[in-house]
Length: 238
Image (cartoon, rainbow, N blue to C red; front, side, top):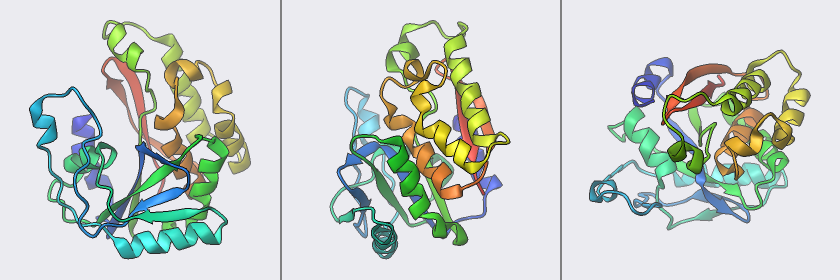
């Protein structure tokens, strides 16, 4: 996964700005980072001391945050700006691998409390005009996020339940479905094979809903490998 993240920028045009939908931030209204120079927010505990020494000194983008908030409000989605919150690890871990120079303005968008899948697809649709700009949008989550299974099963052991769900995700996000069928499947994602085994809580899946809603078309698989012994995927919409 680290190798993939390091090499990923070679597949992309260098963006003018980066917007991260972080699995690690939930608010009652769609909320954007508004700080010009966001601090670090170490939103984890129990890790080695070095994990709290990571820095990622990218600037924020208050102007883009204001514009995105206006886009959301224009589409009847309540939105606000948080001028104090810092970069959480949903942003600084992938971006430190992808763009270690930290020379691209970056900001985050929260998930919506309640984790309604249709609301997150709508959130993406409201941002669709950003597809016309040189902005990299990253849905920062995991296609498998069952912490007990990550650490409770021997690495390399077969996991047919996870395989079934990952195959369903590929069919949903890249297959020959209409966009309405794609959105319906994602709205009812909990009916997918082994859905609740792979996501006992869906915060790590919903950034994908935002990206799919924003793209409005099928994506392609650009990562399909093992992470801590579990199969994980990444998709690209361009």
